[in-house]
Image (cartoon, rainbow, N blue to C red; front, side, top):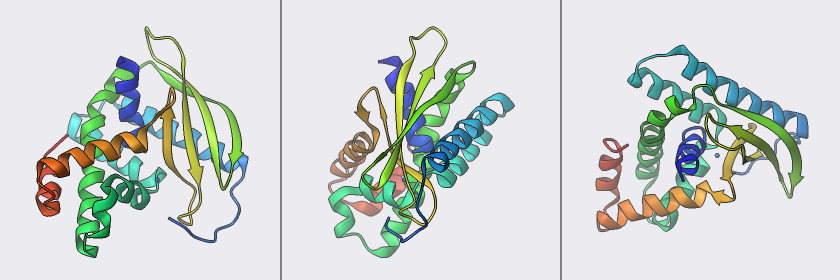
Length: 195
């Protein structure tokens, strides 16, 4: 359970909208995840304070994931009734929330690593399979889903030992919206302080 909790944070902090882009290939998908892992390790190794780390993790999330897709997916059916300005505000609040929520757990990854082991095409995206090594834990699989539907190479989901993190975040955000009785503006305000 410990490693799932930690790596759920990894996926969400990193963690994602159609466009006619140049074809993505195996090497590009592999390179994206290798760069992502390198940036995460760089932040951890720099030993900055917590707030500075959160800013860096938010930058990483924005740089490597399809943030528009991820936040829209997390918002779920509420996205249908949300105004354009609410969607934009939610996306921004969600991105910061994810960085804070999971950024605290990255210190636990010191001395650990992710290694890319395989890349394969699945429909219109690629799955980049990695093995995660954490101190005192058995190695386990983490799979990133990568596409260029947004016009840039980005990951839009990941699985940790078969657990779909995109669905997990949708469930958690849905619960927050329910607690706020469907009030999206209140949810957005709350996300700014949660995590």
